[in-house]
Amino acid sequence: MKVKLFSVLAEKIGPTVDLSLPDQFKAQDVLEQIKELHPDYADVLDQSLVAVNEEYANEDKIDLTSVDEIAIIPPVSGG
Image (cartoon, rainbow, N blue to C red; front, side):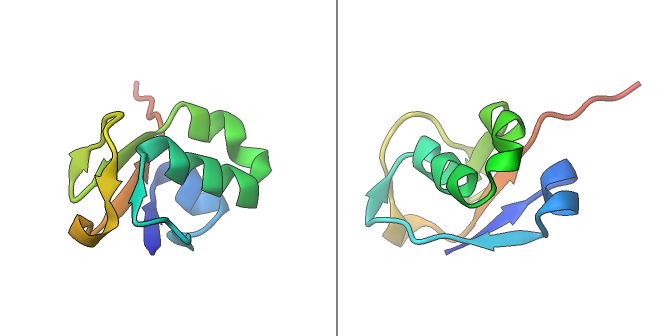
């Protein structure tokens, strides 16, 4: 499953990352897999949100068959 990355993650890792997700997973599972692949960005990932089909994911299990898109939204700052 291709996972879209934004902001600093997209700049440093690239616009997408390929993950192997089980049939049912939680948002935290997505973040953990990315941290395994890119441990240098664990601090940013710990503060990031996971969006599934353009809605922020909560702690519920997600059925992979219902997923069209997963995106990782890192914290943003503005002035």
